[in-house]
Image 1 (spheres, each protein chain N blue to C red):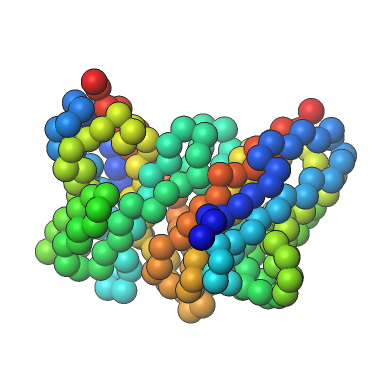
Image 2 (image 1 turned 180 degrees about the vertical axis):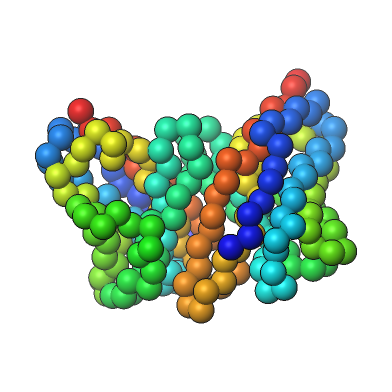
Length: 114
Length: 112
């Protein structure tokens, strides 16, 4: 059973470009969470999705950021018109259920905006 | 959600037990206590979680105070591979939504 797969592992974008980060949850997991870790800081929750639904996006910036988890395929975190402050490690986690269960994290995507 | 307080850093010698403390004095009755760790350049890894009773698994033990205002993660024999940032998290239960609120954690250094 493969773990949570994130790709790409490293992504470099110029200011103003779009970044697309992909996350394939563990087999059988329908709950996906995205977190962001700025340099030298702890992880911050961004968004929680189930298949085709956004359950909680209270941690998402109001502009330029969006997330989806379609019926088929991976979850996508999309950042439009990236700025240098978006440079961070973005982690995806999945779990089999919504409450008080173990969350499995991917290796992360390290986004660098130049 | 309940706030947690952990020491910024701790050191341990290899093959000795390590006790990592966490204070969570504002924990509510339905909050679980989770521990995750993050090795350098890796995503967080689940270690253990519990509600009221002490818990053991293959990685560690979790000792929860009777009043639940504090807990201790116990690594029975530290290895060099246990060097990581350890996060104590009190889960936020809000209907169907669930978040893990990561603080700054404890940086554990294991000395050979």
